Image (cartoon, rainbow, N blue to C red):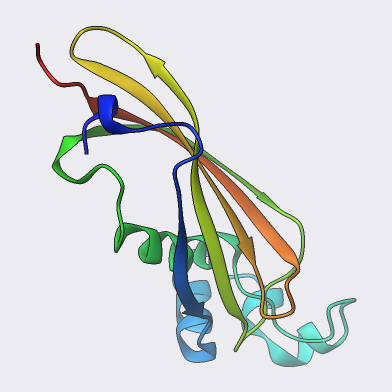
Amino acid sequence: MYFDDLTVGMSVDLAPAVIEKDKMIAFAKEYDNIPLHTDEEYAKKTPFGRLIAPGVMSFLCVWAKYLEVDFYGDELLAGRSSRIEWFKPVFADDVLTGKAEITNLVVRNEKNGLVELTINVYNQDGELVMTNVTDSVVKRRIK
């Protein structure tokens, strides 16, 4: 979708993303190898009482669901930035749902604009676990 077709407030609910324990541990061992993500005995002694998912992995599971409904399609030129804020831990077998909403639009020039997309992510108990704000450069219609 072209920048010119987007409006602030456009939103879409994302399909659920299940945090699978085996994938969570494998991701952690590869990219975030700390005991809180990989060692069950260690994690039992923490305030969480069990393993928690790496934050980036949790985000990527939800991002994959966003890409299934991608607002921009072939009109996406590039990502510019992404900010993630985590509020609650995510555990194995949690089911994350999200809502992606366009929260700002800025015309950059006659060829493209900057789109701010905010995704609020909730666990199966309805608790907000993270928020992501991603800025992307999207093509404008050439007039």
